[in-house]
Amino acid sequence: MRVTVRKLGAIGVAALYGLWSVVAAHGYAFNEIVPDVRQPVSVSGGSACPVHAHQLTGAGSLSFRWSTVLGSNPTTILTQNQTPTGSLNEIEQTVQQSLSVWTNVSGTTLTPASLAPLTRISSANVCSVDGINSICFDQPDMAFTPGVLAFTRVVTADTIGIQVGSGPVSTELGQILDADIYFNPSDSLTSFATPQALSANPGSYDLESILTHELGHTLGFSHSAVWSAMMFPFAPAPGTFAGQRPTTQQPDAPLADDDRTGLRVLYHDPNDTLYVGSIQGHIIPANPISLPSAPPGVTGVFGAHVVAIDASSGAVIAGTLGGWSCTAPGPVQFDGNYEIDQLPVGQSYKIYAEPLDGAVAPSDVSNALVSLCRNSTTDPGWPPLQGCVVPPANTTFTTRTRPSP
Ligand SMILES: [Zn+2]
Image (cartoon, helix red, strand yellow):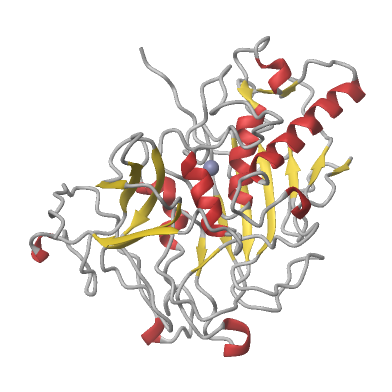
């Protein structure tokens, strides 16, 4: 039997921003941004090390609105309640529930209080780079290539003090200034159903799963190569949903531990004492000349999927894209380094590395890869000493683990 998987697009529109001197290693598959070091240190931080794209998490700092303009011929958003008012309320409930999935992960500063009240707008085509986070169900876009069910367009600050449209002025490097979610409105074979309507419409995609995934992009995630992750780039089959449904007791139930760990890296609660474990290492070639056509400066395996597994349960706790590190003032070094942070302490872990040669390919995490470097070709006038070129992901290696000392 063949299963058709459909792709969820992710579009990062690199823009503006900047803040501290990063001596970061790196991250999961986050969307990164290299601060614009052509600008004064006061607004760029002076370091060309990438910064994770992220939202601010102060009270009411994360706001979304959704457009009530829906496709009607054919209907693309299916609800159980068929009255106009009831249908909109049901969709809004799904949006609220999807947001609450991400704001109820323990050990993070992204809490329900971070959310501003969800608002509606009755205009069409409100998804634009205007500094307002919007969700659109009926807006065409060039990015809807065949198979794309939904995508998210994110604008991230690469200096402090910048703004798009009427949005907030950036106060941190990597601050997301605008994030819009587009659902495919024009594919007559594609429809989405609320959780209440899904079982009666088994040919539809689960609105809650797709929206929760796209909201992950608005929070700074790229894609994950972990099969069970919400941020896996392929949608659950029609009539099915990702993970478990959220409950009052566990609002974040749809997420996998990989998603939770990534969220803890992006928004770690400084008061948390449980998720403070870290594992670091290098993936290096047994024979340095075996690196396929590696550009100068590439000394390790780049683009490996590195996974931490709980040694007792076998559960995947987190995966990351390995192969680089960065120390201020940058640029990124492609030295095979990986680091998996915010792991629960008091556990033992096993680590494995695999090439991205399966269902998830480097192109599915391209935002996380290409955003690691800027140079004088991508940005005229870029200082050469802080420039780099992202090498191709290595998809052909095999691994052997060195015995512990
Ligand atoms: Zn996606």
